[in-house]
Length: 106
Image 1 (cartoon, rainbow, N blue to C red):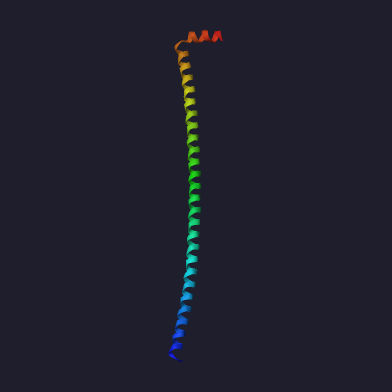
Image 2 (cartoon, one colour; image 1 turned 60 degrees about the vertical axis):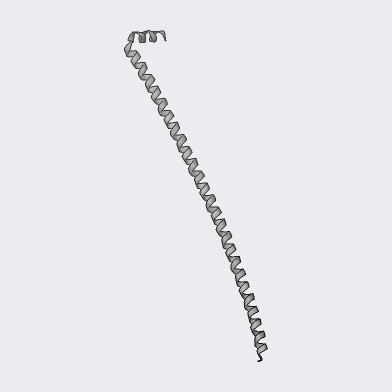
């Protein structure tokens, strides 16, 4: 073969190699873009799930706080009732005659 034929074969080989390399690079780019999109979607899902868990935890904390407030109010109410009974008993013991008059009036 003549030298110019080898030159043509070399140029054709270079062109084919260039086209193959660009094809591989485009495929790798597409795969990387797909992986990035999947990672973004996964990250978005994880953030949404974390937000949901946080909201559920906040709701549970709020419910627990309300329950404790109800229990404290019930304890205060019971203590006030017991105090009123104690005061009434003390008044009875302090003045039995008045208690008798009150009993007679009722």
